[in-house]
Length: 128
Length: 128
Image (cartoon, rainbow over all chains, first blue to last red; front, side, top):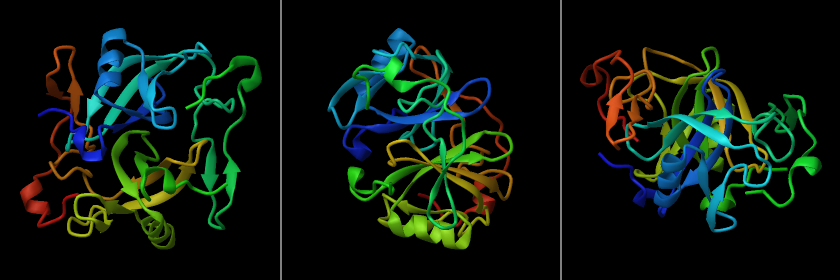
C-alpha cells in the first residue's frame, strides 16, 4: 500500500512528535516531493500551503527536525514523523511546541507552556 | 484568535494523543460542528471526509475517546486532542494506534505493534 496523496489534493498531514518525550511539536503537510526530500535528507521538509512551495523546517532558524522514524496510518493518508528537534523549540512564536495553547470550556485560549526563545532573534523570514 | 476552519475547506486536522502515555493514536478531521459536539459531549466527534458527515468515534465499537484537553496550534489551523481512549485500541484494524506501520528506507511498510483486538468481533460498520 502506498501513501494516499490523492485524498486531499496531493497533501497528507504530517504530525511531528519528539521521539524521546512523545511531545507533539507541530503539524505540517507533505506532498510527494517533500516526503521524498525528507527521506533523502533525513530532515523534515514540508509543503507550505500558504507559500505554495516546499519548506525546509529550520531553513532560517537552524531548528531542523532530524527524522528518527516515519509511521503511516491505517488508511495511508496521515504520517507520524518521530524526530529529534534541534534547538530549543519548533514554534515561530518561541515555544517548544506549536500547541502551546489550551482551549478552555469558555472558548478562550490559555497558554500552557513557557516561551523558550525570542522569535525575533531567531527568525528572519521563516514562517509557514 | 479563533480556529481557522476556512484554510482547508471547513476542516482542521485533529491529532488524537493518549493523555497519559503520549502515544499518538490517530488523526481525524473536524469541522466546526464536530468540534462543538466534541466539546459539548466530552467525547471525540470527527467529520468523515469519505462519508461526508459527522462521525462519532466509537459509535459502533464502543471505543470512544474521552477528551481531557484540546490544544490549538500557533496558526489556529490544527488541534491536538489529548484523550483517555476507552477499550484496547482505536484502530479499525485491531491495533492500539492507527500508526502501527513504519516506513522503511526501502519504501516498505513494517508493522511496529501487536494487534490487540480482533476487528471483526468489534466493528460492524464503523470506519472512517
